[in-house]
Length: 258
Ligand code: UDP
Image 1 (cartoon, rainbow, N blue to C red):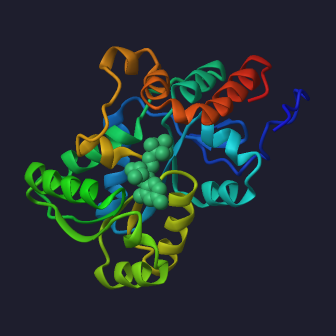
Image 2 (image 1 turned 90 degrees about the vertical axis):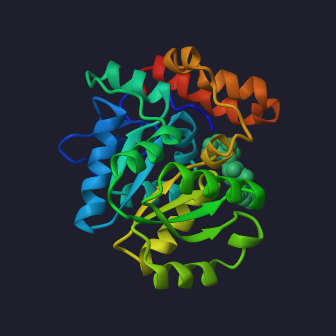
């Protein structure tokens, strides 16, 4: 992407804004005072059965969006956009909005924690077969009230999207967690929402790998200093090409173009 230095136009076209949202690179993002507050908002929609779609906004997604109109439209149709990346939190602060960082890898577990005592049904979609199996085992041990009604890995289990869509339409889980990486997971969620609109959907990226203990999360001090990206970069140098998006985001931030 060539960085547009015109200071009046944001990197993405401005998506329509609801009252509490602030645009970062043209993408509306809601500020939250804490992880818990964000989880509470999701659970309210789950309990009311109105369904929804929470999407994590980070530097990579903001930049991807400027080239990917499908993803931009999908983000617009989501019901909740939360600040998953430290860069997005900084950009919000520069616009006068204070928000906690709400990491997607923490948010789904906080939602489940707050739902204790209720028997919600969930779908788990994504990750390698052994990671998915370990995720399911740990989830059922940590949250005995939860019923896992659908579990499909992100490889052969997610190849036949029509079959998976039919399975979700029949099982009607309260919450559908999709851990396939972006933007594939968001685009898939759109297909699922079309047949099971009362479900609440969350895209989780590599969160199952962390929960299953296959990948390590950055230590807390790095998370608190907004350095989780550095930890992932050092742990998986193959992610280097993805880091160029973070640099572009930083450049736009400095240029006041977000
Ligand atoms: N994945 C999958 N099917 C695929 C490719 C990836 O289920 O065809 C999974 C992969 O096993 C990993 C997750 O998707 O668990 C993506 O993780 P990544 O760390 O890339 O996502 P991020 O958190 O950066 O969005």
